[in-house]
Image (cartoon, rainbow, N blue to C red; front, side):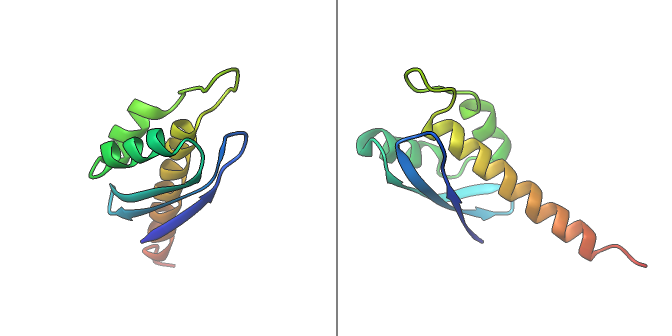
Length: 94
């Protein structure tokens, strides 16, 4: 499933990615430092949500409290949790 995340407080403006279960695919950043963000996209291809968040969450950029990598970790984790929460609610028998 394709997801889109509007970033905040970083140079990139948007991140799109797909989740195949808990596997991250096709990460694309709009704006930002092209070379670095292309590298992050390549390096994160095929990672699990847990692997990606373990490696990238909390990274900062310059004097900022976040970075494009940190924003990606946040976006992937939130999309995964939202998807699983929705699936769990759909499976509840009333």
